[in-house]
Image 1: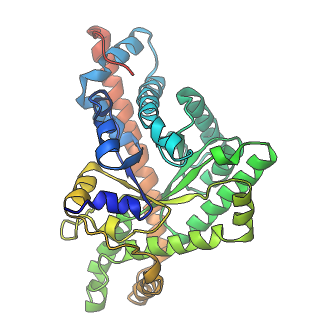
Image 2: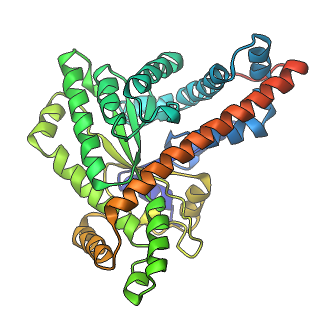
Image 3: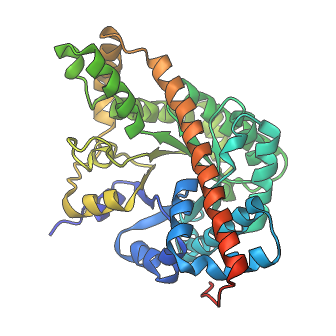
Length: 378
């Protein structure tokens, strides 16, 4: 019997779960996934938390206490989410220790409404870092123009960062530059670079969703032949950039100071088009030193029928470049695509955050009238 997740891990891909809930923690499901499914990290987002809080009574005791204390909804969300993330960090701490701090990470996001405000993003990151107070935390900061200096500043202060919402190769280059700048400043400030890590979350499936829609509108045979190819090509070329940057003199100097490279993380790896293989954004993006954060359905699909063929990035650099050239030839404006995706991504995250606030507000009001009993805690 093959074990695709083990094979994936042996190829150097860190398997992360794109989900966290108090139910998953209290039932020890997360610990089971670490043991049985090679999961070595967790990412979260506002949608994940909104679903978790609205569907489980395990939050009732804490929400009830927050309601009795008349905590405002934004502070309540901060307390609820950091509680889960701190617990998740504790579950994954053995992985963190065993991998010398590289994996065993749990990510929590700054308020996405701050995406265009550098100073407030840094302030929020500092607060979350202090609140969770675990060495295996990642603070998620979006790769907007305002986010780039925030990323560098947080790293300079010794805060580990998961850079999110990366769609374009040009923006990815700027993200890596911000990482190098942050670590150089951290080194100058005397921080232990071996304890400071970062990942760059390069979004995958959303690229195909947007470009496929445009290819359908073009409608030519040449355009239709390119459907489902853009996202993987884009990610493969991002990995090529990653190799070039961290093999540079600047990258090597930080490596000599015990710094870890900023690993590429493949995000949004659940397939949106049901006609595509549900494991494609995993099995087609295998190379050493990457992270793939998967929804549980994708994790289970890979475990069940994923075919791991070894390195599926390095042999395909020229093919990937040709895909982007062919897309341009049929009329796809890459710069416009990635701008639309970034703008939509920020808007969607902000909408999800507002939905999280509304859901939490409703729970605060419900439990203010009917206080809850006790709950399990870590």
